[in-house]
Image 1 (cartoon, protein in one colour):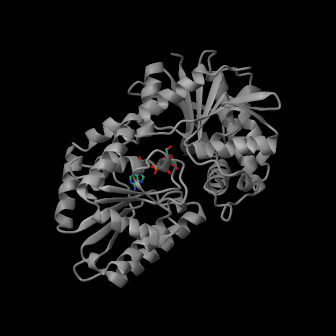
Image 2 (cartoon, protein in one colour):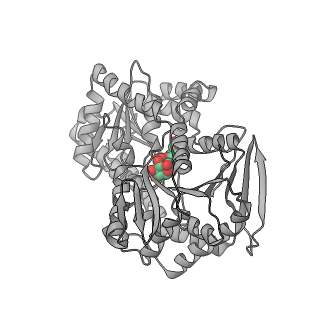
Image 3 (cartoon, helix red, strand yellow):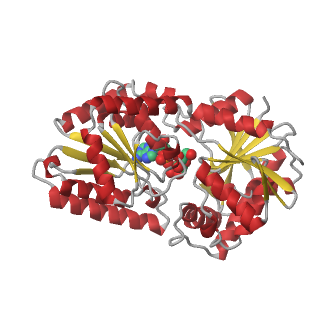
Length: 458
Ligand code: ADQ
């Protein structure tokens, strides 16, 4: 096994309280096994970029990070990554913003990463770049003479060509991806869009997994991410999980719980979800005082105005719906603006008869998988899942819905609430098998193997 170098915008080191996501845990395991290194931004700002690298080691995982200037953070992170690419990649060209300084800031920061990174790379290393923040990284490393195998994994969707061409200099961005040996997507749909772009905009040719553009070749594959299933199950047996489970039992009494857990992001379809819940309450008055929607949504990316708008809209919607339907002894929506630890999430998921995961567009969506993993096999809840989440490709036994159609989502929730135990169990068993088998370790091994086995032509 060659040494692995993982590169992502932020680095996540092992923490003693184990409060990390499955992705961090899986990558840390890979780095530990291979004696590898995780490289990225420290999250800190310095007045003037100086390229100096800080090294750290924790629990057998080594990291190397650089600080950025405030202008870098504004143009690269809040600008091109989160105001331009994130909305565009989630099909929202209506809110995608572009100005030239975003594009130049993005290239500058990618170069600032490539500069110290390339000197750390040894000839046998395998390099794994993550996500839309760092698309041009391989081509920049190639300019420094790096010939190693380099893979890129995109955690978000890849948009249809017709949308992508609205991005100024889109060709330049996509051409830069031909510095990679392997490019991985969450689903066949995103892969198809990428192939379509390469064929139609770049005049590329396709041969099996391989795409060739102007003599440069890469292998484009599907490799869906999973959760750390075993670790997640273990988290549900902790004191923290038991404490919250007990609190929920006391506070719910006879209420049937529906749960939503998301970062506060317009791609997650939160406004549409609350409207669907309102439809449910209008259509089925017998549910009043018997159901409750617990929606957990910690704010993210607060520097970006669209995120502040979503937050305001959600406050307004939750207030309006609660005001309209609440009784002195019942509030239909418990809307919570904070995150919970993994142990606590297991308890929340398990307490809920329905898991409501209705993004308007999502690369994968790990909450759908976590909800299934947390269920009691003897009395499992039902997953209502957006057909526009990457997870829908693997989770066909969920109740799949169109999140833009509130009546349809309301009907699916009602179906879930009324679903007989035998059907709940049958759907759950199939879903759980998939979530357990194709977990985050499976994903990581599969992707690293694909990078390592791919023949390069460099
Ligand atoms: P995200 O958009 O952040 O990630 P998602 O996959 O839904 O989305 O969640 C990632 C993790 O964050 C999950 O483990 C979840 O438990 C945790 N999380 C979400 N909301 C939380 C909350 N309210 N409190 C505490 N924890 C919370 C991007 C892509 C996704 C893709 C992932 C991984 O947008 O499509 O699934 O990367 O590739």
